[in-house]
Length: 78
Image 1 (cartoon, rainbow, N blue to C red):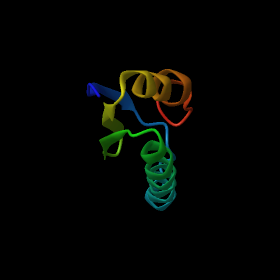
Image 2: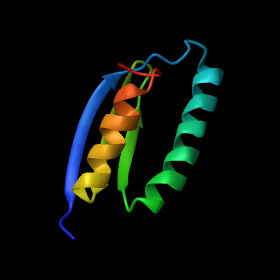
Image 3: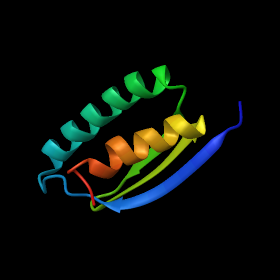
Image 4: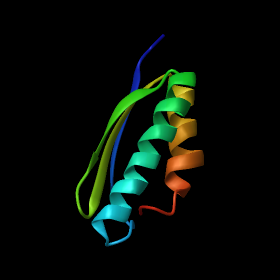
């Protein structure tokens, strides 16, 4: 398998309340770990108060599907 890597940064649209943002990040991580393992995708998610940065690695078709069909449409960031 050829490893494909996609890196992107976006602006967070999560709530301004730190406790709620932390809960939302935890939910994102739980869902990502479950879904990405099945698709053989690994990566890293970095979050600051206002930004996300993410690296995704895996089969090209799966990484592109995840980005364009799911992440790109996610209303929690732009």
